[in-house]
Image 1 (cartoon, rainbow, N blue to C red):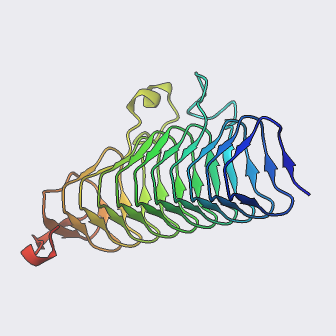
Image 2 (cartoon, rainbow, N blue to C red; image 1 turned 135 degrees about the horizontal axis):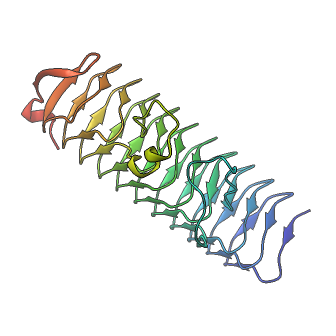
Image 3 (cartoon, helix red, strand yellow; image 1 turned 60 degrees about the vertical axis):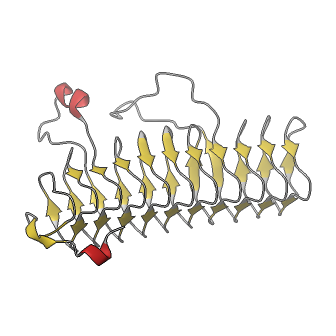
Length: 243
């Protein structure tokens, strides 16, 4: 048995599995497939042809702890899912995110509020995307990576599995750090190898290649290969490997 609020709008040829909940004011397009035990929160907008797999929660209202660094200071608009997206099993996408068309957010991923994701993006299994993050078109983030708050990934970026970005350089728990939180900026076409760590506020330049396991402690130069801990220049990216 499902619960579908009387004010929710379901388009033509949309199907809903068992034990799902669709709250008030949700707007669901045509040819959408909703799996079993899915929760679609109030006001969520879902584009035509989108698939939402079993156990997913979309449009969730964030509830930060009293001790959280980032508090909610404004009304958060509904989640917007573009057309022909695929949302994996047990994925959670919060209210206030905007997801472009033909984007895949795989099983067990989490996308927080105030996030903008472009079109034709892949966010892999068990990836976490924190709040105030922008992700460009055709970017790929592989399994188990962590994209910290206040980060920007431009178009055609590749993030390999288990990459970690960070945004806080302060050892002490001082109030001063709140105004200086800054995540990574990964420019167009850059590639970050598996298990790399990018320190707060670092810019990975256009078409940089960061070798697996590197710790990036300073801004990089365009079209260079860097490796090590701390990461250092190794060579230029071969011309045939550029976008």
